[in-house]
Image (tube, rainbow, N blue to C red; front, top):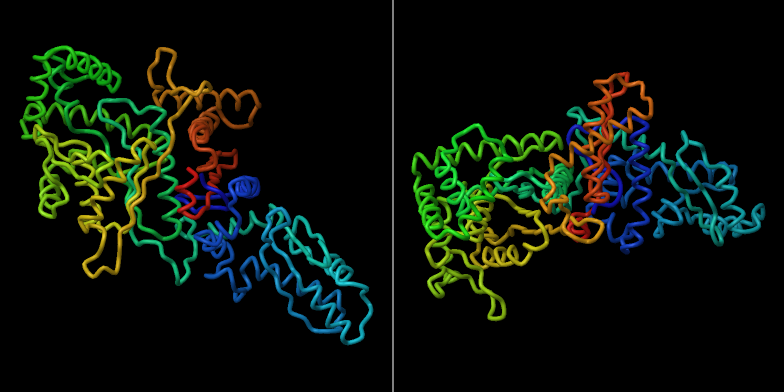
Length: 543
């Protein structure tokens, strides 16, 4: 999950009300920080420090060289208050630090003790203690357009202040006023983020409807992309759809047998697939013809290729409808895209003695205690490992990715660990001069379960179609808006319900990972709020 402040995303615009909402969510996330032991020192001082730097418009939060930084604004306020409290008796320059405990506030000034000591040394007895001096400084703090929501004195003279929601919202508003409508975070000289990252996510199967399980991969992946982009990383969004293999031999053979030609929808394809699977498991003759159909397809048979392309296009249209609803755009690179690369990659692994034959299959052994990664079946056919190895090789060598991120369910973690290990042993991840190394990450998430802890399905036992879920969310939002008696027109209300419903569905599955509200008001302004900030390492751990 993503904790913290505000992450810049595509098309991001906040008005006062919604930016305040974003900041409120940020403050509530502090409870989650404490729950997981994530303090500013363990989270914000990683990539989060660059987010704070951006809010203040300077590259390093450990310095107050810019008068626009949050810390500089706080320091100026305290200097003014100290000057007023001391009435020019001595000249001071206070110091401010972030509160180590968020429960105490945002910033702390401990200068009252040192100032009191100097006054005492000079024989000035106007203040009886450092605490009395601190209390006077608090009273003299300037309003600064409501900068602080709270200022208090703790212990012998520690002054703690908390920012007001409105002041933070105004800072957020300043952050996103870029000419292209996007927000971006300032990067320090020590920035270690890559120039280009590939994120592999969503990945539905051709001839099947997207179901609720795809929502997690899709939204978590998109969140990672937008977070990386806000830090200036070039992101390549790839949709590794399942569009190749034995299942298509089954489906194409079944369609031929039933003389089914054109005019079908994604639901029809899914039904045909289920029927073909039953035949494949029970009918040996159908199984043999299906396997032959796969060979014909992979060899480029014109009839099989035409049918396959038609099936892919029907599925693609259905996927794009959903991606449009979620405001997501991906580049499709299905399993078939890497078909010609697989032999090259496997030969490289064989030549380096990483892949060896075992019982007729080509296998990669990591250690004796673990089963091997089978990258070519004993019948000579390719499988998921074949494709994933080829895809990783292509992304590193051709796309020149410096970071490759895979977003799938947690059950595939072992598989990707084996693929990553093979790539490392093959030397794909290290530059020729060994000065750079490609980073690989698998972001795993759990299954979507119902209230009984079982896989989320319909009453008939089927997986819940994602499009049906989104439509249901939109219908409920529309009903709620109508019940509130909004001043929106019927068209605007329907548009608002569609957008809000889509985002409600996202929130249902990913906690705080992503939040967006868009509402067209009678004044015609579009307002979108997307709070999100976190060090990427912690992001991967807590999703």
